[in-house]
Length: 605
Ligand SMILES: Cc1cc2nc3c(=O)[nH]c(=O)nc-3n(C[C@H](O)[C@H](O)[C@H](O)COP(=O)(O)OP(=O)(O)OC[C@H]3O[C@@H](n4cnc5c(N)ncnc54)[C@H](O)[C@@H]3O)c2cc1C
Image (cartoon, rainbow, N blue to C red; front, top):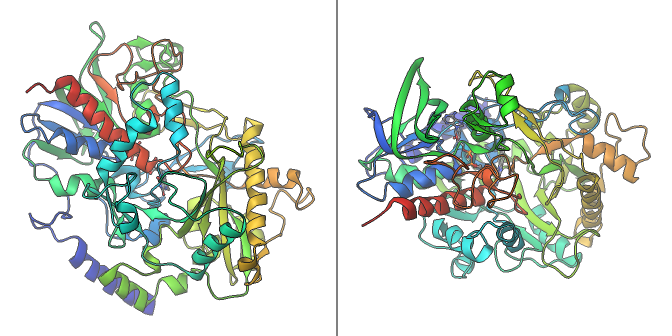
């Protein structure tokens, strides 16, 4: 009752603070444009992390008319609260995809043995559903992209685009050459730290890792997480890039507009528009200059295939005429998949349990000032990049990332996080219920440069039919081996004096399905990883960028779809290799760079 009352109060106050819709409120709500023309210079599909940036940057040129189409609606109020990130999943603002069953490989302990595959379906796309961690990846990642023949994408060439977007609130960081001040995207720390967060940094030091800015000169080390948050509230790509410019006359926005096909002339191979459905009506809109596909790692390849671009036999089998045959659309899918959580129980009352996070004082305080446990980035306090025995000890190119959480899945007593991970009833009852009242902390270790490759394919030619998603997790044993070493590093962290001081103990109950393996052996760790596989949704490669002659390339280094004129892809699907970190910042960087590539092509003064 008290909780409900405080939520209601918080909501009312929140409405007052965030959603005032006055013309001069840079965060005012987004509305559909009153009328839609039949022709624009550019049509952008998807208002996500990358698409929102492109809509902003292209409409900087007054004479360009731009239409931004988004399948979902606007963000909602609850989605602004960082600690409630998991609550948005499995709602209408999530596409609610699921993977195929990967028999014997992954997701074995999850509901129906399928991994959930969340993606944002609203303004801001997945940046409106994500955990807001601001991470760029490693210098070597982008240099590797360039070495593969993707000219213009080396670290030194993409760094200015990361910096351009950013408005970093931390004075120590804002002044360095690695960070930006005054950009549209607010980046800051959560404004609240639990005693466990400080312990994480100290534990890292004891293990020989420095406390440093993982987005700066060196990546290896431990840090308090930086996030895309503004005054303690989510700063999605839409809040950052669209809300402040939503009244530009040359930008039209149409939400609830599901693009079903890109219109391509089969003879000239030129894209000339899109078909979309809104409230049961079908629209055809034409693009004088370009169609820009920013529908994300899953929907972009899906839409290309629906439009006749992809492996010809597969398209024909589904009854689709291949306009440009045999581009490897949907191939090379790779992702960061983590072991759900390595849990450590403690004797001190430090955990971010629901009753300590959602109560009247924290909610009211949060609504007014932003800096309470509710501003924690999906509960993630710290990040670390570490080297296992498989990484080059001399190189600053760590192979494992830790997401450090000052609680565990049980913190909300099974209300939300459990479902967002897809934990089955059996696992919940056998593994989690026994510790539901305990204080705990946890680590999600993830292999940063996975070698397993999967695919996205059509289920059918119906654009509303979800695609087949098979990430093929852990098909390459390397991915498993690195995560196993990650678990060992997490155990090492729990043995540092600071964590021992709170009597941290690995929660060693056998995970359901793995009881047959002796606890602590590599076989047991492998079984656990394959059972409790949780995607971080850093999917890359499904419309891969590559130079001429690269058989896996769907787009060229200027992001133009091969063999088709006036069609570009700009989102995480173009990444040839996933960067060594979370992918939202990189998606925004891709949006910034794509905008310049488009301006270079079309803008003549
Ligand atoms: C639960 C979760 C947590 C995450 N946490 C983090 C994190 O903490 N930090 C981080 O860096 N990364 C995180 N990520 C990943 C990161 O947010 C994504 O990589 C990034 O947002 C992808 O950006 P994008 O532009 O490629 O696609 P998206 O942001 O997904 O944009 C695609 C847009 O296209 C729209 N669309 C799709 N199909 C159509 C269609 N047919 N017609 C019209 N519109 C369409 C979608 O609705 C969406 O708005 C997380 C992802 C998830 C799912």
